Amino acid sequence: MAAETRYSAAEAALAALDVRIASVGMWLFLAANAFYYAAWYFAFFYLKALNNNGAWMISGLTRPSRAYGTIVLLLALVSAGAYALATRAPVRTLLWRLPAVAALVVGLGVVLFQAYEMWHLGFGLTQGGFPSVFVGLTGSWVVEWAAATFWLATIISQARVGGDTILRAAPVAAFANLLGFLAVVGILNWILLYFLP
Image (cartoon, rainbow, N blue to C red; front, side, top):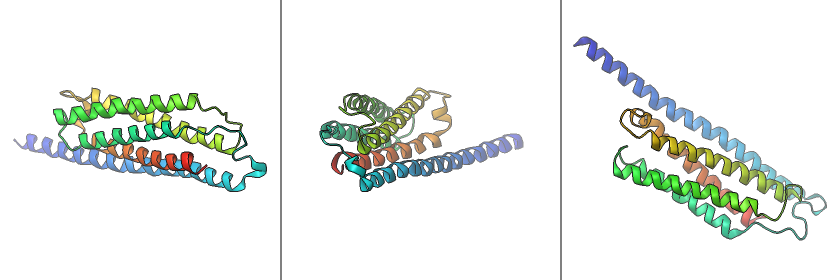
């Protein structure tokens, strides 16, 4: 009986440690990520203010489509919102699985729509300051969103008896913070890149 009590106390201590590691680790990752995007926003405002010889936005440069930017932003918000909704229900229930799968499908849509837009921009990296910042900022955001979508797929695939999603629920909940952060970055990108160039 004492061995069972000791074992369950050790399990409880490990579970508490897992919650702390998942929470602190995700917040540290998001803080580092915030500095990464802050550097891109600094480059945007610095190059726009500097504008040597009209090189920020050269004449005749086609602008990115606001329609595609809006579609990508709305899909990102729906994906982050669906997963945030999923984290409110216990894992392995239908109320968890449906929003989580919807977040995955919509997240794939984000990647596909943004990739299509980037493939059909109408300008290259060397055609001024704005194109280089647009491609760098949007490209890094969509790569990170694609990685998050892959991570979400692994979370969903592990939602079975004995799977990591069941055994370690704290990282599953902490993942919602990443999608929320990327959705906020998407809003800032949308404002800067589609309305303030």
